[in-house]
Image 1 (cartoon, one colour):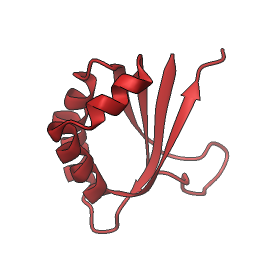
Image 2 (spheres, one colour; image 1 turned 30 degrees about the horizontal axis):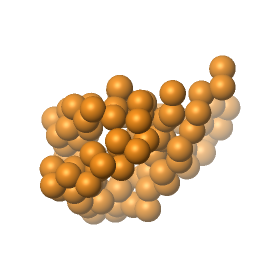
Image 3 (tube, helix red, strand yellow; image 1 turned 90 degrees about the vertical axis):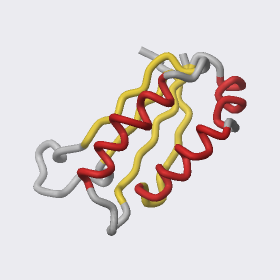
Length: 103
Protein backbone atom coordinates (compact mmCIF):
# COMPACT_ATOMS: atom_id res chain seq x y z
CA UNK A 1 0.00 0.00 0.00
CA UNK A 2 1.19 3.48 -0.82
CA UNK A 3 0.42 6.40 1.44
CA UNK A 4 0.29 10.11 0.72
CA UNK A 5 1.28 11.89 3.92
CA UNK A 6 0.71 15.63 4.13
CA UNK A 7 2.28 17.78 6.85
CA UNK A 8 1.07 21.34 7.25
CA UNK A 9 0.27 24.33 9.41
CA UNK A 10 -2.68 26.61 8.89
CA UNK A 11 -2.15 30.01 7.37
CA UNK A 12 -2.16 32.79 9.94
CA UNK A 13 -5.54 34.10 8.78
CA UNK A 14 -7.14 30.63 8.70
CA UNK A 15 -9.56 29.65 11.43
CA UNK A 16 -8.92 26.31 13.18
CA UNK A 17 -12.66 25.79 13.57
CA UNK A 18 -13.36 26.56 9.89
CA UNK A 19 -10.57 24.24 8.72
CA UNK A 20 -11.61 21.35 10.94
CA UNK A 21 -15.26 21.70 9.91
CA UNK A 22 -14.26 21.81 6.23
CA UNK A 23 -11.94 18.79 6.66
CA UNK A 24 -14.75 16.72 8.19
CA UNK A 25 -17.57 17.83 5.89
CA UNK A 26 -15.79 18.31 2.56
CA UNK A 27 -12.18 17.13 2.31
CA UNK A 28 -12.35 13.69 3.94
CA UNK A 29 -15.68 12.62 2.36
CA UNK A 30 -14.65 13.82 -1.11
CA UNK A 31 -11.19 12.24 -1.07
CA UNK A 32 -12.42 9.01 0.52
CA UNK A 33 -14.97 8.67 -2.31
CA UNK A 34 -12.19 8.54 -4.93
CA UNK A 35 -11.73 5.08 -6.48
CA UNK A 36 -7.95 5.38 -5.99
CA UNK A 37 -8.22 5.99 -2.23
CA UNK A 38 -8.90 3.36 0.44
CA UNK A 39 -8.90 5.66 3.48
CA UNK A 40 -8.12 9.19 4.62
CA UNK A 41 -7.36 10.32 8.16
CA UNK A 42 -6.52 13.77 9.49
CA UNK A 43 -4.59 14.17 12.73
CA UNK A 44 -4.16 17.30 14.84
CA UNK A 45 -0.82 17.39 16.64
CA UNK A 46 -1.08 18.29 20.31
CA UNK A 47 2.48 18.34 21.59
CA UNK A 48 6.00 17.04 21.21
CA UNK A 49 6.61 14.25 23.69
CA UNK A 50 9.10 15.25 26.39
CA UNK A 51 9.21 18.87 25.25
CA UNK A 52 7.46 22.16 25.78
CA UNK A 53 8.09 23.04 22.14
CA UNK A 54 5.13 23.24 19.78
CA UNK A 55 4.95 20.50 17.15
CA UNK A 56 6.57 21.57 13.86
CA UNK A 57 3.27 20.87 12.06
CA UNK A 58 -0.27 21.40 13.33
CA UNK A 59 -1.84 18.71 11.14
CA UNK A 60 -1.00 15.45 9.39
CA UNK A 61 -3.11 13.86 6.68
CA UNK A 62 -2.63 10.17 5.89
CA UNK A 63 -4.23 8.96 2.66
CA UNK A 64 -4.06 5.25 1.77
CA UNK A 65 -3.76 5.10 -2.02
CA UNK A 66 -4.52 1.86 -3.86
CA UNK A 67 -3.59 3.24 -7.32
CA UNK A 68 -1.14 6.14 -7.68
CA UNK A 69 -1.83 6.51 -11.42
CA UNK A 70 -5.54 6.55 -10.70
CA UNK A 71 -4.99 9.17 -8.01
CA UNK A 72 -3.37 11.39 -10.61
CA UNK A 73 -6.46 11.04 -12.79
CA UNK A 74 -8.85 11.50 -9.85
CA UNK A 75 -7.10 14.67 -8.70
CA UNK A 76 -7.64 16.16 -12.15
CA UNK A 77 -11.42 16.17 -11.75
CA UNK A 78 -13.27 19.46 -11.41
CA UNK A 79 -14.46 18.52 -7.92
CA UNK A 80 -10.96 17.69 -6.71
CA UNK A 81 -9.56 20.87 -8.23
CA UNK A 82 -12.12 22.83 -6.20
CA UNK A 83 -11.27 20.89 -3.01
CA UNK A 84 -7.54 21.39 -3.63
CA UNK A 85 -8.06 25.14 -4.02
CA UNK A 86 -10.04 25.23 -0.78
CA UNK A 87 -7.26 23.27 0.96
CA UNK A 88 -4.76 25.80 -0.39
CA UNK A 89 -6.71 28.60 1.27
CA UNK A 90 -6.14 26.90 4.65
CA UNK A 91 -2.71 25.22 4.42
CA UNK A 92 0.57 27.13 4.59
CA UNK A 93 3.21 25.43 2.40
CA UNK A 94 2.06 21.82 2.90
CA UNK A 95 4.62 19.04 2.46
CA UNK A 96 3.33 16.07 0.40
CA UNK A 97 5.27 12.81 0.88
CA UNK A 98 4.69 9.49 -0.85
CA UNK A 99 5.47 6.58 1.48
CA UNK A 100 5.28 2.79 1.64
CA UNK A 101 4.59 0.96 4.87
CA UNK A 102 7.51 -1.30 5.79
CA UNK A 103 6.29 -2.77 9.07
